[in-house]
Image 1 (tube, helix red, strand yellow):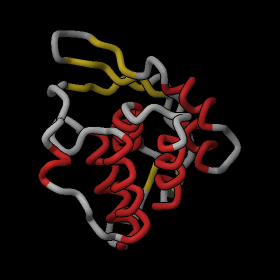
Image 2 (image 1 turned 60 degrees about the vertical axis):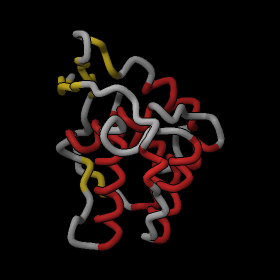
Image 3 (image 1 turned 90 degrees about the vertical axis):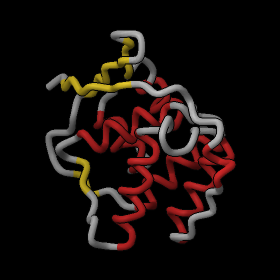
Length: 150
């Protein structure tokens, strides 16, 4: 995963297909339930807003980016030194909540079309439409570690 490709996707310079191709192989299995996340980070700061993540939700709902890739995106953006959001603003709070939910679908919500539509709605409105039933199909837990390719 190249953070620059994700940034360019947010800016409309890269298609969903190009982003999906870059995300393929981001996570490497290194043990029974352990994975390593490979990402080349940005060299400059990039402020994230809900609209950026809505664009990603739209690509998932259109079928150009696999829903499961949101786990890699969420983990990578949280681990990055350069993707930034204002946790003191309502928009930044929604961004943070969404990225943490995406990065750990095994303890939050599975990543599928139904939950991605709910993430999209929450990013746009702040209204949480998740139910207990949404969390019942969680995937098996996994451990992910960070390895930067700087």
